[in-house]
Image 1 (cartoon, rainbow, N blue to C red):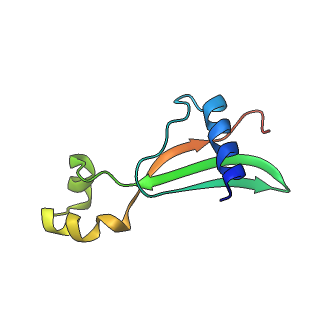
Image 2 (cartoon, rainbow, N blue to C red):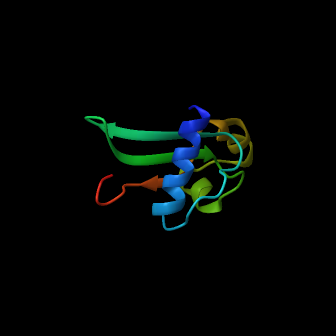
Length: 86
């Protein structure tokens, strides 16, 4: 993502997402979702939290398994479908 795209993504999130924009912690990836060259959604994913008891119980991880596999999970940090679609 270019710096210009990054600024645009941040501005859309700040303006239209109910949580606004805050920098995503750690490793991250952000997407613009388009169809027929129209913006329909913005997605932001970041590194997973080190410990989240409900997630770890649901998955059934031991402490060692979490250490070994945490890098295989992501956190949905932002999801925005602007309405009306911009």
